[in-house]
Length: 138
Image (cartoon, rainbow, N blue to C red; front, side):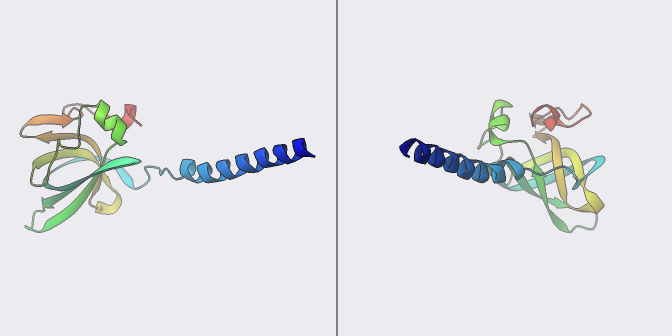
């Protein structure tokens, strides 16, 4: 009877663990929201969000009409960005940056970042290469 109860408890614990972790694993999203066109925009950093599963750069871009448009740029995971040489203090609000990446579908102001340049120097990625910086880092 004791052996059966221990086995039942072990099975129940595994079912609970797999159920909880299954939601985490399936939570990652695809790239359907991004176009295949590469674009480059210049903007001013408003904030940087270091959170799993990705680092996000929020920045303001002035469009052709002089209107400020809030953009969101997606990078890879925090650990990958740290390994690529970026830190939590690399970009700060007010920094002027040039962002190259795959833009959002239908002109949505989002981008899957290939590279970021600040003061003419690459912060992450290579602005002179084709292809996403994040191809090898996801």
